[in-house]
Each structure stands twice: as C-alpha cells, then as structure tokens.
Length: 321
Ligand SMILES: O=P(O)(O)OC[C@H]1O[C@](O)(CO)[C@@H](O)[C@@H]1O
Image 1: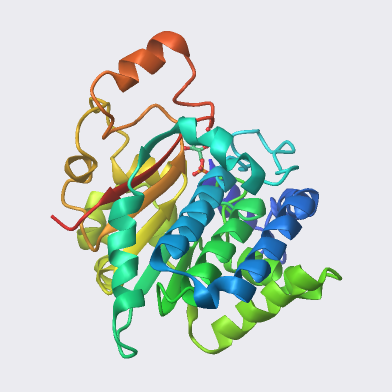
Image 2: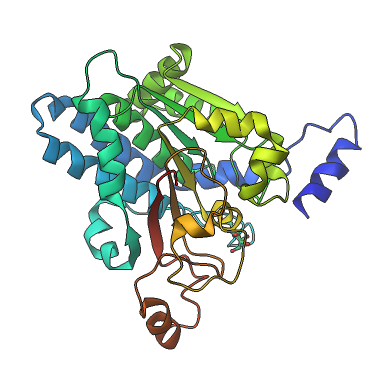
C-alpha cells in the first residue's frame, strides 16, 4: 500500500517529491514537545556531571536511555491509523513501572560491547548503527541515545539508516531527520536548542552519518540482504553493534514466521548476522522469539492482544554466530 501511494506521487509531477504524511508527522513532533524537552534537559544535566562517573553509573544511565528509546517506539502513526499517538508525559519518570513489560532485556550483552570502547585506548573506534523507525518522539529518543553513547565514550561514531520515501506513515526519511534536528536547534528552549546544535555538529564532523537504502522499503526479509543488497550488508558489517528500532524491523528480521516463542533470536535470524545486533521493539505484530519457557503461553492466556498492543517490549540481542 505504501509503495502504491509513493508510486501515485511519483507519477504526478510536479508533486512527485511530496510526502503525504508530512503534516501528521510534524503534528506528532509538536504534540510530543513537552516530553522531548524533559529528555533534552535530562541529557544536558547528565553531560554536566558525567566526568566523574564510574562504569556502573554509566551503565545505569545508558540502560535508562535505551528503555526511553524502546518506549519511544510506542509512538507510531501506523498503529493508530494516522491519529494522534504522541508522547504527552515524561518517559523517564515511568521507567521503573514499565520494567515489568520488558519481556527480554539483553542489556548485559550490549554493555559488554560498549564497555570495550570506554575501557579501550584513545585510538579504538566503536561504530554503532541505528536502523531508524518512526520520526517524531521516537526519533528524538534515538538522537538522545546516540548523543549519550558518544558523550559517555561508549561509541566513536553513530550511523543512522532511514527510508528513501514516506513509509508506514511515520517512518523517518532524510527530510524528517534534517527537519527534526533543525527544529530542535531553532526552539526557544535552551536545553533542546543545545541538543540540536550538538547534533548538527556531530553530522558536520562525521561523528553522525546518515544513510538511506531502497532495501529498507522492499518486501524482503533480512536474511536475503547479503544477496539482494550486498552493498548494504557490507556496510552493516563495518559496525560493532546494529540497533534495529521497531516492530516492522523485527518482523523482517525474523521473517514474520510463526516461530515458537522459545526459539533463540539468533536462530530466527537465520543467515542474517552482519554484526552483533539488537532489536529494540514494542510488540505490535504476532511474532516473538527468545522468550523463557511458558512466558508466551502465560501472556496469551491472560491478554489476547499482548502481541499487538504495543504494551510489551524487548531489547533483544544476537551475537554474530
Ligand atoms: O513503527 P513500527 O514499530 O515498525 O510498527 C509498525 C507496525 O505497525 C503496524 O502497521 C500496525 O500495528 C504493523 O503492521 C507494523 O509491524
């Protein structure tokens, strides 16, 4: 359907470059602004005190921001049919309450990779890639996470991957990416504006890099990437850690199959192992692997819509196997 819409636009010059979802995406950004402001203030405060942080404190902070980025994935405009689905309240203050809804949390595995950079010598490089999902609140949570990873010396460069055109209503395009940074920079809130400034500089200095590839809007499951888009697979192989945001990425990682809940994530990925990777996803479609014995059955008995409501989430890691 999204390709059909895109095709319709492409065949209608002079509006072939028009994003039919632009207005709802912008509206969702503005409606989430109070929640974004509190995150930006939190990040700047963190930067002010992090020089004396122990590794344990750094771990705790980055774990918090990973969870913020996870819950940011609740805000997509395809699950709400384009209706307001913005973040109205600060996520940070709710993290403890939300913990029970994280079905898999592989933070330890992520930490082992990120710690290598922090403990390494100045010449070591750690590249983290983020395969983006929704613009609006979720994108800002991804920026906050990426900024913190650089500032806390857990990574040296972050590469973002976006869509070539409008997709699943709110998915991030290059225009959304640049627009969001520019809007943050131009706001009259000092913390948000400072964030926007840093993010613009990160791009200029090559600490942040934006990529786009047609593959992300093609129907292929990711285990075919090496064959269908070898250039993209080779690009991901340069990464130390690839974070896949959102539900649709999870469906394509696991091939949207009816896996048993307990099948290991690495197995469900089949031949897709370009680099260590992690899915950060709230559940909106009926595929889930890597659960402890009995968890899926227990949830199914208690809540018929647990796999599609966006209430549950995973931070699920796979090493290169
Ligand atoms: O933005 P996300 O997290 O990838 O979610 C997209 C998901 O939303 C839906 O369009 C509706 O729930 C799913 O079909 C799709 O997997």
